[in-house]
Image (tube, rainbow, N blue to C red; front, side, top):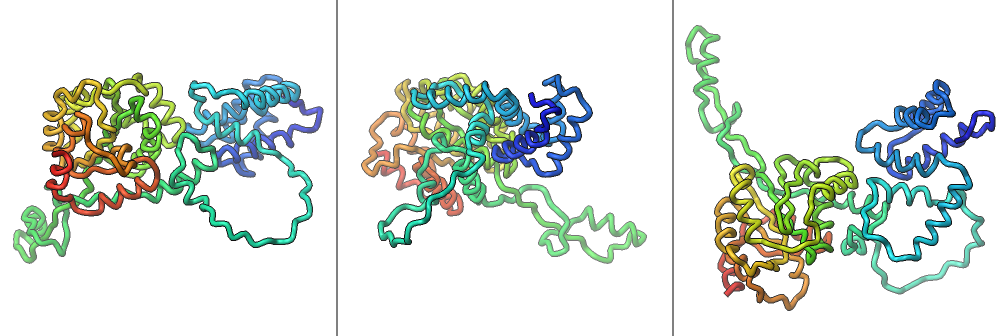
Length: 400
């Protein structure tokens, strides 16, 4: 810990603020000055008090606390330990990465801490040359880049793209009515209330119209071993959708069904995914599609499939139980919702054929069969939801 006698406390506070900004926290000059003022009111020899004072001045939202804790542990330590940790990190970078999940915000803080604070002198620029080689732009590469392989900058760009992917679910008319002078229906209750102001005389008629509301969106996503590379793409997309609109219900399944709707409501994506990882015990396991759909139809269908819900079923259709009871439960699920869309990553292959028992049992009961493996496929899904439901005869012909 830097003591005030060394004259570097203010510089270290400014450097810590720059680290938090690079990690994505909204820390500006006001927070930096408040942190410097807070450290004058406490004992600088107590590290816990210093951490609490800096957090009170620089952290404004609860989801940023995990990132702040990671940055505090990396920044406020002695120089020898920092150099030793940096050397160990360079050695570990050459080894095969472990499968343990990092702490929330750890990757962003590590990338922000590893950035150089001063640029080296640049060499004189060479004369400009015209390069006619056709290369893909960063935006085009982002369309096919896996979310799990992205760093902090790529995740920020992907979030910006995902925020633009607004689901155009058409609004459905409800039974509720709202007062509207240009409405087509006569509101008798409002008319009688107005007549009381004129001594019971009805001088004019009040009108109302039916209110419109987007239908619920229900997502049932497969997280078995065969779907491990594609589930994170949908989780990032569903996290953005869950924080952008109401009545979004998300379920994950492998060998059991897990409701993660509340976890995805957390605004910070990394914290939300960490909460999902702790609440879902069967990640990258087997698949029992028929049994899972039976559980969903029995426990959740009446709760979440009302008012013309749209269901997105994300799975490759590979059922280890041999499609036992799959057709019956798919039929019940389809009759309980307004639109059932099946997203299958195996459709990225042009020569895909519905040869497995699970795929053949599910196809007759879906309204649309679409691929999902990158941002381009998500854009295709949005275009699909903006069009009317296609005829079922085409899918029946594919299943036969």
